[in-house]
Structure formats: structure tokens, C-alpha cells
Image 1 (cartoon, rainbow, N blue to C red):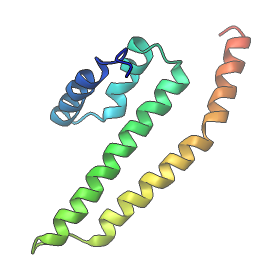
Image 2 (image 1 turned 120 degrees about the horizontal axis):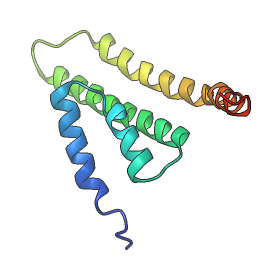
Image 3 (image 1 turned 90 degrees about the vertical axis):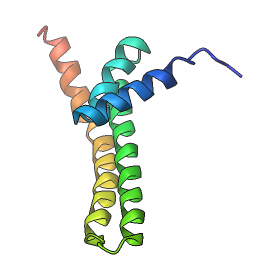
Image 4 (image 1 turned 30 degrees about the horizontal axis):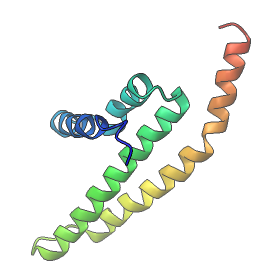
Amino acid sequence: MNLDYWFVFPCAVLVAVIANASGFSGGVLFQPFFNFVLQLPLQQSIATGIGTETIGMSSGAYRYRRMSASSSSSPEPRTTCAYQVGAICFITRAADGTAPLRNRLSSASSSGR
């Protein structure tokens, strides 16, 4: 068992508490951690932050749907389904959208901006 990254779990819990208390998304707070602390390249840290955020939102939507199914005042079930479908579409669109961003970053760096 490799314990090189043992500190990531306590930091992740701290970031999750701050994100839930402040209203910021977890991806916004995790991205600098991935980039500066773990030394991931910028594109990977952004993608990992978005993935972390999407997993958290999907988990919350799933839990909300299960909770609402057991309560008498259940919300519109189509709403929670829309959250889950939207998360899946966002993940696939974000994966497709990395090539144009990569091309813009490389052209900006080659033109000397």
C-alpha cells in the first residue's frame, strides 16, 4: 500500500466542508489544489475538478431522489432526472470541448501573448 498521497483525503474533506458552507462548487476549490499542490498540468486539473464536481452533484441528485421517493411531499421526479441527464451531458460535452481549448492555448503561446 502506497501512502504518498495520504494528505489528499483530509484536504478533500476540508475543501468539501468549505464548498458546502460557502456555496462555491467543489470543482472551483479543487482545481487550485490539483494544480498547485499535486502539480497536475492545468488542463488535467480543470478536467479533474469538473469530474469531481459532477460526481458530487450526481451523488446529491441521486440521494435527493431517493429521499423524495420516501417522503410524502415528493418533488417533481422529472427535476431530479433532469439533473442526472444534465450531468451526463455536461461530462461528455466537457470531454469534447477540451480540443478547442487546447488549440487556443497553444496558438496563444506560439504567438507570444
